[in-house]
Length: 171
Image (cartoon, rainbow, N blue to C red):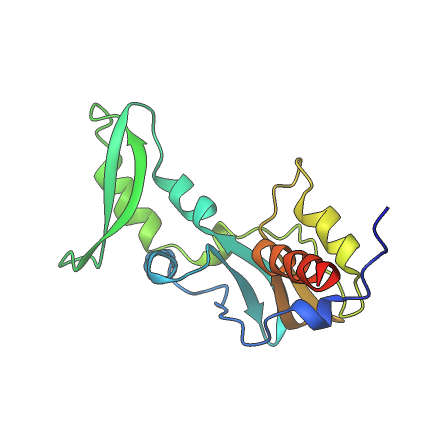
């Protein structure tokens, strides 16, 4: 059996974390996520972590059942088109209205508030267990000091750490 890693969340976390506020516009946040290299952002209110919002939370607002819609950003004019394909029923007459209505909602209306967080001392094994949990399907874990966000650890960070440890152990 391989020895337990001595790495902790503080060693793996990104400290320059892009965040949003609870009252930020859903359309704006969806546009930011479409251009970002990550698919979710923590929601901060008065310095405290209050939620997280993901592409899945936002794109889910525009899902119906039959066909595909490419969501434009910038109402009006349509300045960009997101690369999200969602199922759309062309028979759904409220689609355009729902798209506009949802775009103007605040992030607080869709953010996840049932958060899984860790502190800076969380072990690599503990992080791995959280990120591999099939029920929660988490891609990133906020690192907090009390209710203050101090960093974030993504699945990719954990995978890189495991890879690097294996390479170092095999040298």
